[in-house]
Structure formats: C-alpha cells, structure tokens
Image 1 (cartoon, one colour):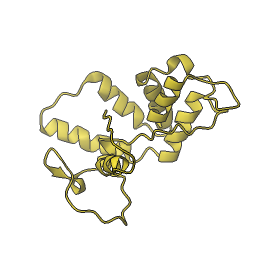
Image 2 (image 1 turned 60 degrees about the vertical axis):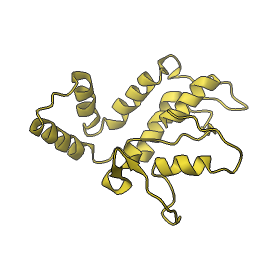
Image 3 (image 1 turned 120 degrees about the vertical axis):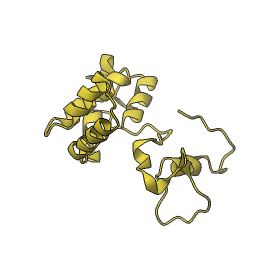
Length: 157
C-alpha cells in the first residue's frame, strides 16, 4: 500500500494509474515502468497492483456481501481454471510445494459456478468485514456501515 502526497494537479493520480496499468491506451507517455526488471508488456499489471479511488461510490441499499458479489460478477472470474492448470504445471516443474491454504482457495475459486461465492467470502474475510457482511452499505439517506468499513468495501471492489 502506498500513500502519495503532493500539491493539486501534480500528477499523483496519473502516476498511480500508470503503475496499476490503468492508463488510457490513447494517452501518449514517455519513459518505461518495470516491475523487478519486467516491462508492463511481460505480465498483467492489474493482477499485481490496484488503484483505489479516494471516493467511496456504492449503492447504499445493498449489503456488503451483495456489493462485493456484484462487483465480482461484473469483473468476471476470468479463465481461472486454465490459469490454475498452468500454475500447477509450473510449480511441479520447479518442484515447488504450494501453501495448502492458498492451494485450496485457488482450486475452490476455479470451480464452475461457485467462483463469485468463494471469492466474495474470501475478500470479506481478509478485509475483516465479517461483522458487517449482511449490513447495508448505506449512504446519506440510509444508515449503514462505518466509514472505515466503507473504505474496505471500496478496496474489495
């Protein structure tokens, strides 16, 4: 996690968007961003970093669980099964023994039809939102979760 401070219009958001691989394709820029010597074209930066907006934009009448499940469905679960098979092949080739908890999560998240449930429950757990998972997020008109919990929901999206 990174906190970047600077005066208004100094390029803070643009820098963070570039690092997260979310700059518009039509933008022209110079220089090169690398991660451990690998260029942005060598991997999928969206899998290694994220940009979380400072604004919490949610539907106040949805619960935390519904909000995260909706976000997971909108983003799609992607080709997880193929990715898992390739990861397993590479681990065997390199004689790597995966952590049992992570291995079980990866396999459960790749199951057809259950991806969003497993991923949603996992995100709720790692963000410490179990206590408010079935509480409405809330907005100016509807009482809901606290500001800190709302920020964690934003992060989970």
